Amino acid sequence: MLPSDSIEYKKKLCHLYNEISKELFGFGTTSLRAAIDDNIITLYAKHRKSPRSTALEGEAPTLKYEVDFTMSSIYKKRIRDRLEQEFGLKIDAVLRDYDPHTQWSITNIILKSE
Image 1 (cartoon, rainbow, N blue to C red):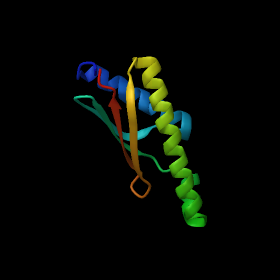
Image 2: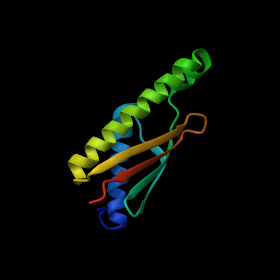
Image 3: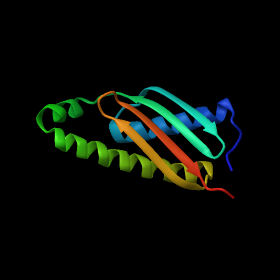
Image 4: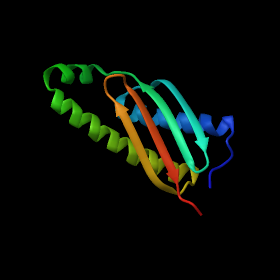
């Protein structure tokens, strides 16, 4: 079951999300907010475009797509692990969609029903 829908809890979720972003990409998001509804946590994030990503986009677009997909998969694993370890959450699924053209991502974390 989800903890209370408090502002403080949402801030902690956003802080964790940004920490992972910094670990993987070297910088945090430009916009980030969390929403909690029943047993689903949703994180809306606007990411910064890295210079490497821009270079790959022009020279090797297929490789850029593969890198984006792989990094998103790594992100999902890390956020699942950290939420389970640090927040004690029992997670059923982590779903993340990322739009490389706008740099927006939406992550849905579905908690196990008890």
